[in-house]
Length: 640
Image (cartoon, rainbow, N blue to C red; front, side):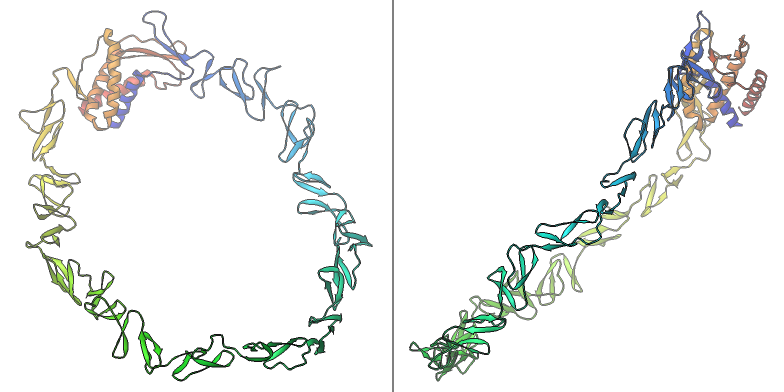
């Protein structure tokens, strides 16, 4: 029932406050005082019965098109506007000649299809990017001429032969490259100089026959080749040498001849000896060669090339027979044997008990000297800050909040105590709902917060209650817990007010508490006044001379009522009574009867407005409206 009453009320109020304002709609004011204003279509606009709106008017019509503005016609493609013989007429464009490979898009104007280009006003032909030696038969499709074939997208001439050393310049015609000449159906290389003992294989390039080679890089002259090279002679014919004077042929090699034999040497030239490797001439005489030692064979004698025989008290160095060093009974570790049977120590070492011992300038604390100024820590110790001369005890744990006093033994700082292998903080007072994180310092657990050094549970919403555990609130007496915290409880509902405390009501704005019932709030308006949206409004009908001002007030109240309609059913019922009384009052006044079926006058409680609208807007007759109004009045009265 409330829904039906609501929509009746909205229709009545909105009808009284209607103001039509849009494209093509104009207001026609009355010419004499008291005449009604009419809404009608503006000049150059006409009424569209199907759409129920004012639409623009084109004076000469808009055949096959759409009138979008007064006297402005737009055609749908491909049609174009013709204004010559028949104004505002959309027709297809006309071309005197048909468009080849194109469309007629304007009078005597052709537009080519995609992939075509125009050659005159009415003819379009296919377009190809590259089609030399061929015909373009469709967009980017080239058909080669006879004797040509497509290679890499281009039409190139075709020859029956492979045109070696040339290229196919025309169908079945080869053109030789530079340096070649045609012989029959082939291109042969040309050598300006004849190839002696060879064959022309490329322009001015000879290839020697087997057993011959170019003479000093000159490829046109080929000479016999001997694989041995014919040193000290010349190649007479392939693989056959002839020797120079003072040489003789042995195993097809020209070797020098020495009249005297070369002891420990070789004859390298006629009557000239050269000592073998590891030997040298004795006293400048090349005929006699003696062994040579590169090291000079100190402390020994050179008996073979780079091999010394050491003197007594000396021995080869590291098995090297070229060097003899003094020999000592001990190995002289960290030193060297300076004389037979005598050791000398290296720098940083000193001779002690017949051995070279390392020397450390600073004593090794908790360690021992293993090299010059290099300490090695005892077991359970490690270098301090990388300085090896000082070793400190080492603990497997990091001794946080303490220090390593002995190997694997931690000593805690003040305020900490050793628990197993860790130094843990000590708190004099126990940490309830928290952990001891530093000496005499507690950190609350999750869900607790510190208050005067005590960890108490924390709740997001616990007003009017006590937080007994994290996010667990116990409300005070007379309150109950909701998602907004602890709210008060009232045994009865607060009329025109809200529950502000246990069994305690507070009135809404514009209301005061009843003297006899604290759960009831009455409005502050006097008699013949109603409280609407916090404002006192007279419930009596307005006078005719105040109709204009009351109409404005009613419009404002209607807007405010629209904002509050969802939550104020009681307020709607009060306003409904006022509207129904106003309707009954209005019907006692004379009404104008429409004379053309297009205009209806409606006299509201605060004045009258005439609307020029289609006669299809109002479908109910006056009798039905009166019966429905009386029925609504009875229902509203019973509801109140």
